[in-house]
Length: 247
Length: 247
DNA sequence: CGACCCATTGAATATAGTCAACCCGGGTGG
DNA sequence: CCACCCGGGTTGACTATATTCAATGGGTCG
Image (cartoon, each protein chain N blue to C red):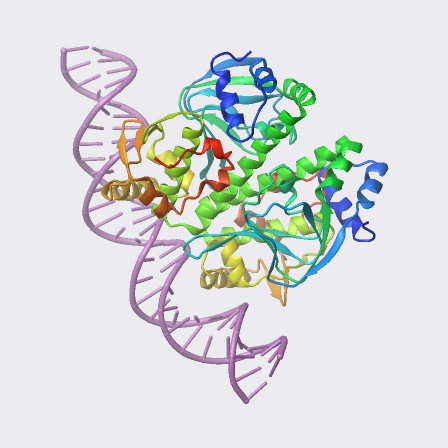
């Protein structure tokens, strides 16, 4: 059962599709098993065949793949409300790892329960599908970013994306967001060296496009930042009512 | 109705899941409208809401996104048997473009027909889902390639992937495959300049890892090439019986 | 034949990576 | 309480990888 936090999943689902009251209640009644995962700890690993999906309730998680030559590519940062391994419902064997970035409270939801829910509420099934497809869309945009954009734009784009995603689940305050990620981790997400990430951060700060604090980032000049990043949130497929005008 | 070529879709489907005879026949009876698309022509564009899915029957297609600064990122090359915009079934508005790479024979399949088929054969529905999820998996691997691998490995990885995918639908002959893609196009797929792609091709040729002809590529030394590329086909999620030993 | 696109080459340049330090703050153990 | 350690952020100098620019040759197609 998801109380309180349950609204977060509902919030995430309604950010991509409209739900009826009955559907919202059914989602909140979903049985979840809470688990507190320490920072920098794997939640599920490549090659495993999970029987549960992981719902992020509190904290940040991330998915990554390792290369033989010792590299690590961070595929996606996950925020509360996300279900990072939703795909395991229909693609049994995991092709990447999921880990906690910060100490993270997860809710494990049994595949069976989701299937049951989907049977009762076919429209919910399609919302879950939609989440999977949006994840794929985000990955495509990531490909564009890594393939076509220079370092500074990559960083800017990442920050824009995180801000919009966090805002869509109500986790921003004005221009500020909590983003507890280190520069080495950012480097693995952006396909850059951490030294270079450091320099790009300084450049963004120098241009007045970001202000950073301990674990927080402020975007005081959204339009210039979004412009530099060539950011357009269409690929996040948010419903219009969850896309407030840029602050 | 798909005759002849229809086997290609069946072939693709069985490459990722087992099908019953009834299911195979139902797939072959799917009504498709054939269309011949000239090379370098858009099939569906970003922002559109297609009512049909595109099945590649003959030739090669590709999906791409343009950036404001004039860049083009090719997301994926599609081979016969692929359904590049399958996602439009549940994510109505397209977030990227689909075009023909060569003159391409496509089969348009109405969304309604696929939905009907999925209703009659629920297991087929999950196979179509699986295709979507595999596409997402491929995109993740693309992120790893662009983020972590140097130019030479990127090219090698791309060639390995194309070879395995073509082989899984029976479109290779020994170590050879037809791959009608120009170096500028390769550059847009790999996030490199075409000049550099040219140099990397020469380097692969010099090492004896590839031999190129007009529109064809031979991989005479699979193990060294796969090693250089750090290629592991797990992310393609092929069923074991469709993964012949590397030649 | 001429236009155009692709493949190829060389030289100059730019972007990003590597190496090697240093500082700082938080946490640990004495 | 303090010394120490460790990891993250920062800096400078050097290197490497990849891009840009510019030019050439070969095919194909009107």
